[in-house]
Image 1 (tube, rainbow, N blue to C red):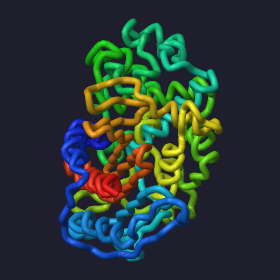
Image 2 (image 1 turned 120 degrees about the vertical axis):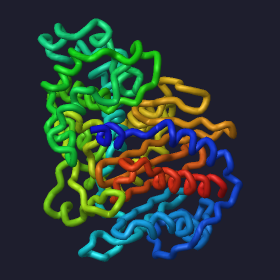
Image 3 (image 1 turned 45 degrees about the vertical axis):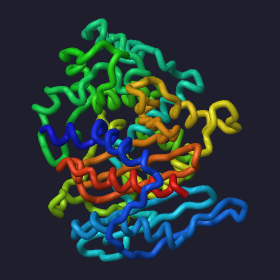
Image 4 (image 1 turned 30 degrees about the vertical axis):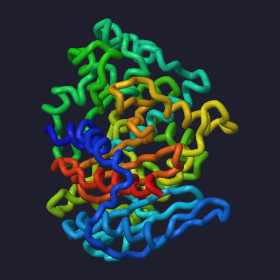
Length: 401
């Protein structure tokens, strides 16, 4: 079932897209207009202020075509610029609830989950619980290690976090054994991960080549759970969500959160099943809101490895460091993808997609800007990059201010 393999990783194409667009930050993007109300946070009087109407108008234009082509869309966009943030909702919550989505509307965020996994790793490295270059054999059960080849035993946590382990996107055995194509990860357990590790051949020598791997990121989160004797969801909430006050970033929803969880759709507007995860949760299981994702980006914007005055700042700064250089324009942090453009601009980003949702988050520390886009359409399964394109164009507009 190739759709599941594709949905939560689509990186080579978006890297080409951003390099061609962000380098043209002075070019004005002309699109059709679409108006909607805007929510504004508090503003510092000591910082430069972008014209509110100008921002609203440009985002309306950028989103117009996407919204008009999707009858049941719920789309939430959040932006950060120096001194303030905005959240805008487009479309409707559901076919039976025509209220606008807002900052508290909950979506599946797919592979954006991976940056949460990378952040958990950063924390455990900072406190000495694990080391980046620890091999996976240190954390797997001994009986499992004995079944693995030496190259697989020697894969490190760093290599899992940077997609340089040599592991495939997903094992062929996983794809062949999917019980429910509408909810493909539900029945994939730790025992099946161990069996697949024992039976697979690496695509490349660990540490030598970038190859995006949902399997590797799922394994990373599982190893961190084994090391700490905590569930993956507990680790993320304890390390990230509670300190940053991100109450709606969760895997398991409360009844109240279910009321704010917009239903997912395929690209043709058909309702889809939500995706549930077992051992592969660290690759794509979390749900969240634009408000929580903006909180996470704001914390990342403020993090500085050398001058951090809080534990959280040190954790986030470590996760942002480039650990593998894939090309002149793309490096990999602890799950973050890092664009370094010819004009010197550096953008950390990640996108995600499940059967009925698509997401994108990014930030530029130098310019102190960020963007979040959450949609309840499963564009990734149809190879539709519209959300990625909107995010890049919004970043371009913010960069040009």
